[in-house]
Structures are given as C-alpha cells and as structure tokens.
Image 1 (spheres, rainbow, N blue to C red):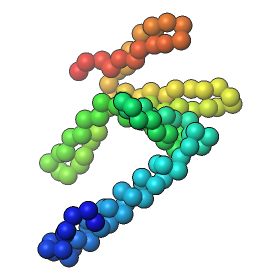
Image 2: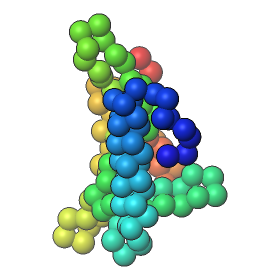
Image 3: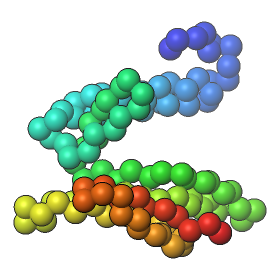
Length: 115
C-alpha cells in the first residue's frame, strides 16, 4: 500500500487492499493487449493504449443515481466489428436521436440531438 492505513478499521484495510489488487489486475490486463490482439486504439493527449478486441467505448456519459438505488447511464456507445472482412462502426445514442453529417468522402460527423 502506498499510504499507512494500519490505523483504519480492519474491514476498511481489507477493502482498500482488495481495491488495490483489482486496479493492478486490470492494469496488467490492459498492458497485455498489443496491436495484434486489438481492434481498438485509445488516444488521450500523448498516450496511446490498445483495448481488448471488440471493446465498446462510451462518450459523454452522464450517470444519474435515483432515489430507489437504481443508477442510469446516458451517453453514446461506439464499437467496431469486422464481419466477413467488412469493417463496421456501430454507434448507439441510447434514447437520443443521432444525426449523420457527411464531412468528406472518408469522414463524417455524428451528432446527438439536443434534448
């Protein structure tokens, strides 16, 4: 552990240790994915990272916690599929309408309708 948690109750220490193990586990899996094993590359500023093949990426996610304990998420989900050698980008706007605006022969904008 990075910080001294020995003064915390044992249940809290156990929970922190478990969370740290989970973080290390998922970091390890993420770093194992290489270009040959993935079809999804994430670029964030100067960093690039491959995600496992078939990953779905969510953008503009808004999380709402309701009084009954239910948690809902709204956003736009995107995934890449290769079916029979034909690459397909799947975009799902959830309950929002999506509009497609061609930009060029090889580029387009997908916009979410304002609510």
